Length: 524
Image (cartoon, rainbow, N blue to C red; front, side, top):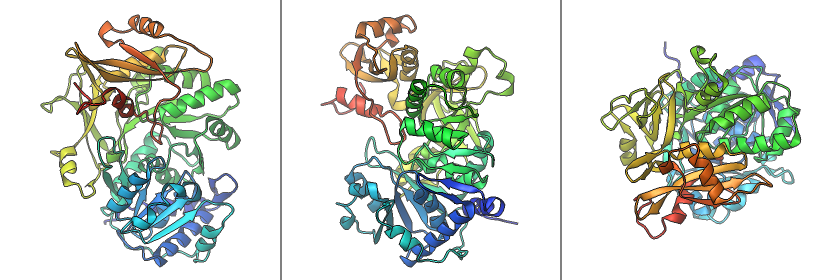
């Protein structure tokens, strides 16, 4: 018996078992799973009336909202391909993506429409633009409700058919479109819901943008489990804390930089959240100090995961193995701050340039590679990039890591972010971890800058906590007490804010670019 693994199964299950349970809590209304399903059926009919069929791309430019969540399932019922757009791009980026993806319909939130209004008439494949999210204009709601809510006659879909087309950040050229099938998203959901302990008792606050690798797949596995999902249209720490308290939120997904802002706001407001909360972190390696703050100061459970768009995206988790839970508190924090070990369904290893496993010594650096059903089908219309990323049945991530004696993987840098100074390899993440230990430092990013003698040396860009002051000499002295001297930043910049992606990941390439102007490449 062959039963295709298709993502519409997840909403079907929620409707069958949790139909009258609250599915969505938005800013001014809530919906049960039955009501959500009715809207999804209406949306599928609406898109079908616009000529959307199997394999067509439907783009969404929206914050975390009801319209965004229902979009996944409304598109999937047609066998069409969901193409979420990053909300922090420039018009020329949207023009490239919408043209390259051959998107037929664009659904855009009213607040974000100005980002695309000057390009929509110059897109050769785009046939319709639908604007939603404007409370003063009920056009979308009227359009939606002009179609029947009755069960929709779905297009037949095979599990190997594409479900998502996700565009990665184009830091070194045009964005690449990652094709994820129903099968890869489905199996990723099964693995993630197990490791993240998702259940029907959960209430998720959608902090992580749903456009970011389908919100790490959260609209799939939280829906499958009948969890309540709270929308968050803007990433404001005070609003996050308010919603966590008000709606008894039990789990949040976010980047470390967003967590840092939440911790600051929470400490300023004073303890006010008393339920158990799990916070799932990925995007960049957090320092152990983050783990201590979350688990000791906030009393929440810290879960570090690792992945990338090309793998749906999660393949490792840092939950302590049963043999390690009795270790000293400092050691537990250190382990939980690592990328961890492979999740069920993914083989993960760290290899040297010859493809051999690196020794488990916590020192020898290699590249993380993975073999998994979660891996993309390839880059859309880019066979060369696909062949470079997937070799001999393994996806090469470009992330450099070590493996400790307990088998926990620790990322030391992106391949391009390792600083090679006078022949010595320096992990920018290690230096950043030291900086985060300083009580006056709120955020830090370490990058390579050119140097006449050593080729390149580490430079630290630092954001101080409010009301704090530091000098360059004080930072250097602090680092020298904890790091080998060649790893200590040779220069410091104190800035108001670090450049970040929409999901909160620090954009080191933007910092490096300032120091490498006039050079053909940003390495020595």
